[in-house]
Structure formats: C-alpha cells, structure tokens
Length: 509
Picture (spheres, rainbow, N blue to C red):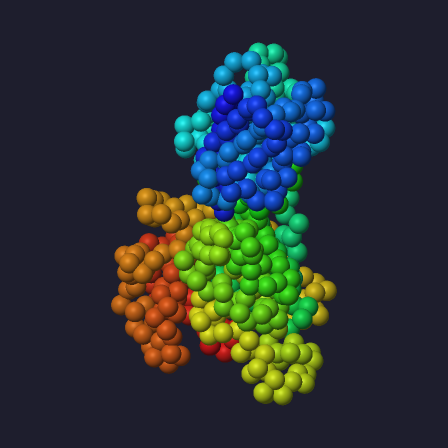
C-alpha cells in the first residue's frame, strides 16, 4: 500500500517542499530509503524502526520503500523522521484513513518515540505558508519560534504516539497560541551603557552616526582606551527590530542550529564577535554544506572584529564583496547558497604592534618598518569600505577620577530612532532602509550637495586622493549627519564632519 505525506527541507536558510512517499509491499523484508539522502537521513531507518516499536506500533516485516521527492536534490538532517514514520503507519494500515494533504510534518525522533527539535523550523514554516500550507505539526520545542508566523496553525507534538493517535481520530493536538510581535518586545537591559564610558566624546559621536546610518566603523587607539567597550555599546543605540527583521534574523540562527530549543523570535539585534583566528569560511560562510558565516549571523545587527590586523588577510578580504552587496553567495561542489549579510561592521585595532604609537603616557618602541607592516595587514580595498575611522585616545587621569556625566544609551537611541524614521520614510519602496545602503544610482538623488559642500569635497578628494567609492561614502555619512541634525539639505558643515571621520584613524589611507 502507498501513502504520501508532506514535509519541508532546508536549502541554505530557505525551505522547499518534500513529498515523503512510503510503499509497503510483500516480499523479502527490507527498508530502502531513496531520494538522495545524506548520512543523517539514511540513519533515520534505524531511528524510525526503534521509535515505532517503542511507541506500541508494529514495524512492517515486509518490503518498505521510502522516497523523498524531488529526488535530484540532496536531503540533509533528521527532520524527516516523523513524516517517514507516519507515512509507514498509513501505508501499513496502522493509522486508519487517508493521510492529510494540507498538513506539513517536521521532527526528529528519539529511539523512544519522543519528538526532538530540528534546525530551520521557522524557515521551513515560512516556505510552507508561501506554498499555501497552513497547518504545521512540529516538535513542541520548535513551536515557540513559530508563534508569530501569521496565518499558520502550529500543532506542537511531543511523541510519535500522540501524533499518530491525533491523526487517527483520537485526542486532537491543541494549536500553539499565536503571539503578537509587540508583546515580545520588552524593556532593554543593555550589558554596556554609553554612560559607563569615560570621555571619548568623538568616538561616542561616531557611534551615534554609525547607528543612525548603518555605517561601518573602525576604532584605532592604544590598549585600554575603551575601544571594545564602545563597540559593545553599539547594539544598545540601534532601534528595535521590526517583525520582518526579527523573522529574518531568527530563521538565520535557526537554520544555523544556534537557536536554543524553546526559544521564540529573536527581538534583540545580534552582536557577533569572532576571535581573530577565525577562518574565511567562519567569517563569510562555507564548508561542505555551505553553512552561513559570522557576517550572516550578524545580519540586522553588529559584526565586531577586535584586533583587526590579527585576522587572516584572506578572511578579511573575503568580506569585501558582502559588505558592499549586502549578501554573500557560497558555491561548493555539492551545494550552493545565498545568504543575507547586511551587518554593521565595527572593528578595532592598535596603531602599531606594541600599541602605543601616539600615546601620551608610554613611548612606542616599534621601528617604522614594523609599523608599516602592521598597518598594511589591512588591505586598501577593505579600508576603503569602512565609512568612519576614529582615533580613540587615552583618558587623562584627572578625567577618570572626576568623570563628567555622559549621555545614556537610551538618550542617544532616541535621536538614532528619529534619524532612522526619516530614512525609512525617504527610502520607502526602494528595497533599502539606511543611508549606508544607498546604491550608486540613487546617490545623487538623496545625497546631493550644495555648492559649498561640493567644493569642499572636491578639494579634499584632490588633496588626499579619495577614490570614487570614498567620495560616495563621505556623501552617505554626510547624509546621516544631516538627518541627525534634522536638515533636508546637505551642507558644507555636514561634509566637513564626514571628511573628518573618513581621513582619521589610519593616516588617511
């Protein structure tokens, strides 16, 4: 007898429909699983057999063939355990009636028949909704992340026995209550507040500009000047995520297997800080299965690279295109994926190997050649893609003993939210929402300079040899500065401040 149920699989962070067909016939006992399964899917034969037996069912002692269609796409992961088991139960007559054709099934099975969570449940649920499937039966641990999936009826299952009884006419499974997204937003409890950073007025101003326009930022200074603390304050300056951003961020982390079981939608912007030993595949993505990298895991949030020159140059240069395009395409022999990568890059570095070049308290002991080699670890093309460069100097002892009262992150965030609101209104319907994302076609339209600003930018370009990309990024930063000031027109004073950040930090490279 033949039975067919429906499931979904992951392709990168996107889901696609999989038809799970089971055919139980007479003949020599056997269990064949076809449809290009990987090792985890092939091993489902043993998990399903044990789960059926330990759940009170009789595993068929005949010929069983299970097909996962489409057969030309490789299937990965254990999420097919539940649909395979149920298809066998329908095909062997142990569940009466016809399999439901409007229900999507996801779930890994333990040997005892319990449903275990799977990665990528949100991505697969959103793909199912696009295909017209409204009923989703998932492990109970995955149900919270689907609570805001509008239009979906989420059925949280706990055991194979419970699910089979419900489909066979027994006690139905109560749907997961839907949760309004607004109720998930709660009062922020930032671990790092801007008011805890002593001094560093210029760096704080640069953080505000970066947060308001989504710009990349490089902090340069001696050890102990607060570069890392400043960077960790940045997420607290960003506005709350929208529902679309939250869904996208959650499905990325879910597909990567980083979402703890029972966790709902992520409402805090991600902050990723990989160690400087991270490889190209770790930063950009890759590996055998083309998994997402740190720049994708930081999507809609912040990617912080501490001690920037210590990273492998090839790994840093691999981020140039994703930073420019906002996405990364990973191509491997057996897989390919396209991941979003709209993350704010924040980096920090010392000015020299010993760290004290330009210090007012300690003398630098590095030779000029060593300083040049150290700074050249960061390629010119990557540096050209960083909008703001700020020197973070040492705080005088008198300032640390009697620190001035500084603005809190909440106060700065209000100005950032007002600037972001202007940007979202200005770019409505254009596919981007922040000044840093303006493309070359829209640059003159949204970042048009007045006559004085044009002359100032032309003079600076001639003196310091700014590239065309550098000029464009100065205009984008000036647009953000104007938004923070509530000005529709870009003035020379906005250009002057943007140039100050463009030419600082690394000697104008």
